[in-house]
Length: 237
Image 1 (cartoon, rainbow, N blue to C red):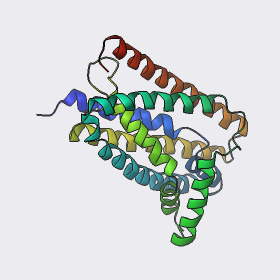
Image 2: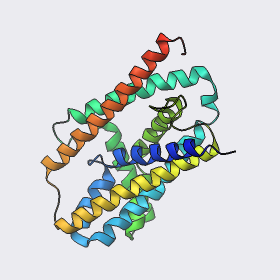
Image 3: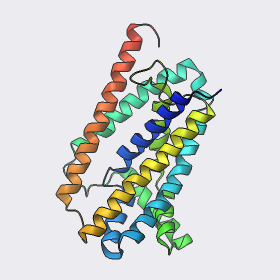
Image 4: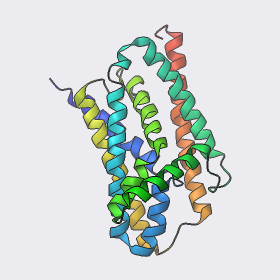
């Protein structure tokens, strides 16, 4: 018997998580949509986003599938709660205190090299394949979804005593579907904004958007930390 409320919560968790992470403006797909959407219009930009969202859906599915058996262990679940808390605090702080959008990390440099190699081999000519290949070459996205899947499957929702995403097929499918919808919602909004503006966002605007994303990630991390502390206090970990 399916728990409709749990499935709905899982779907909404996936939707808003994807919306938050997709809106981090310095990612390769966002910058591609901003640059090419301004030149080629809304249709080209949204097709780039659609291709990117399909590959991200694959990475997200792999991440949730990988945690299916591991999170049955109470110890592994506790370790992942602590790790995801630290990851979100680190990532949020990094985005919040960034002073320039033009300072790539070693992972971003490695991802760009892989993206170039994939593009040289696959020769993506369509907008859809451009978005698909660029996400395929960005293993940072896979790593992010591995951590996010662990976070959502190991943290209780604010208003209930069960995890955001239960370790059940229906819950995970709902969350993955929510991720796909959330990702495409952002890409559609971004594509429309760029095509209507007929120009690029300024570095100042991109930096402000990144700071907002960092602040939201810090709040999520602090909530995770408070949840871990509460569990320790009640000897649940």
